[in-house]
Image (tube, rainbow, N blue to C red; front, side):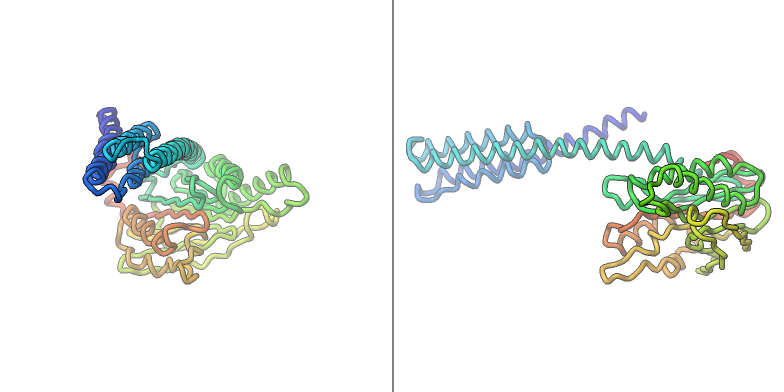
Length: 381
């Protein structure tokens, strides 16, 4: 069934292009008939250039060349009907139209080549995203999860923000972080941090010690790669969260990362008071504090990076995340991400100035977990 749907989807653009092709052809026919019926002093032939100029918007260079040839032929026909091709006026019009058609075909070819390059870049970006940041499962442990990633770079789908989730004993551990910079230059450091988390998160070490291990990885990476001029420039903020399956609490360790929002039913939003340490890679050997908060069934914990709260509107105002999410505290994680994506992009005018990532962690009541079973609850993301 999937291949059949794929072929059907591929046919739709061709069908649309064929339907749109009627417009320039009809335009050529209308201009030709009108010019042949008007007095000799009225020249509508130059308007024929509109037809090939429109064609690149929905077709490639070959179709554009065909429409252009039809327009030149129409200009020749007009010249014959108005006293022959020997007049200087008709010769100039034909030559001018031919030159414009050639330029339009060249533009169409360059445009098609550019689109192919962009499509390849998007494909590579998608592949990098799946390799670097594995998709989070919809269900893991006692949680339902939904995530959102918005890259600031036009042709990238991943940048300096990162997240991951995994199972450790009878709890779920989640990482959300933001490395310095954005776009492709930040991907290497993001890959390092994610790899270190996936390697260390399964160990039975306290969350604060896990943060120390990640800090050491970033520091070691910076020492090996940084030049003297770049010393101290590689760092990352991170928030580590541990949620036991059967204890209604959440444990957190923050390394310079924005605190999450706790969404409770009835439009209640609270901000846990964390004791953050410096970002990872800034001060080696830093002690990390473990904070513990209540996380009851039905609550949603919203993790985010600073690209969300630092998004500005046209007046320079930051995005009021806590105020906006208060409307959607009773929604599912998937619906919450849908609302935030639409609202955040609308606030920022359709484009963010920095990468942004969000994760919604919803604690499912015990009776609902028993009803759904544990088929997906133990798979890491």
